[in-house]
Image 1 (cartoon, rainbow, N blue to C red):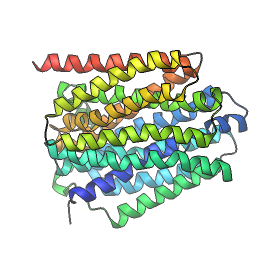
Image 2 (cartoon, one colour; image 1 turned 180 degrees about the vertical axis):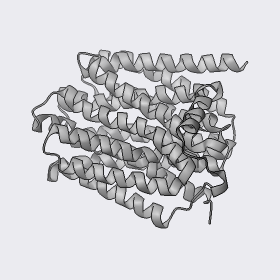
Image 3 (spheres, rainbow, N blue to C red; image 1 turned 120 degrees about the vertical axis):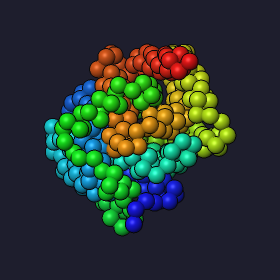
Image 4 (cartoon, rainbow, N blue to C red; image 1 turned 90 degrees about the horizontal axis):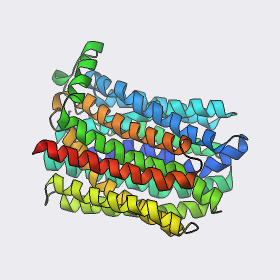
Length: 394
């Protein structure tokens, strides 16, 4: 039987996508501990995030076209098996180099979550209904970042950071079980596209040459570069600079998750009542306010957790609005190559995260300086891209 209900698509897609942030937020409280255990630098610790993002972004470009050829379910099973392998490598890592390898393999496998969930939605839903399903996926996605930092802190209190990777492996095995027994294929055999280099590159060229695809994808990339930029910075500011314990850090992160949940609830309520362009406008206003907050509040109140978490929360509220709207807009006209379109939107999103975390870890002398400069710049660039897109559509 082909196809799934909206609820089943949202649950399975949401859990697949949640694996990506699980591998970040469960792990983030341990970054200073990992740096200390391996006797390395903060920059090297941040590079474990960068390696993960690089593999995550690039592997999507393979995963999407493979799913256009072999179907969403089979490719999902293969890639999440790779994710489990990477998690086990991380769990046994005796050195920073092996940890880099584990994070790379993890990122390669988990790329299926973003690419395939979006393709599964586009296979079955369009327009406002697609935005509603993508918003449901985002709501499910928020549960993992809410729980994972606290769980990671508890694991650190009870044992080693290596055990975090065993938890990740268990989550990957649960996704494999869900795909095996709970998922149905959404791509009919007659709609499948051959997996040949000429066709794959041709499809990507078609997508990249279309402004209707490119501008929403750039919005995704920029907003997520900001999100992953401060994700890489906050553990070092709160734990190293301000002296918070990993558990206190996890509690502070609840403000981020709460804002994202509130934004998703608001998006779900408004998606059937206002046009998608209005949702993007709300997101842009939020990003402007957040960017100003990042530039001003941490400077005025250098030892205040609230001064940092307020702009973080406002950014997450805006991200909840822009993510489903921009994703649906980018994929709307490309149902015949939904796997490639989902992969390329994911590449922009995760590639933005890669660029954001890399810039945060390498371009600035310390984490606090990066936070107060990088985030306002990203907010300004995002607004600039959105205004250019609106000018083009007139």
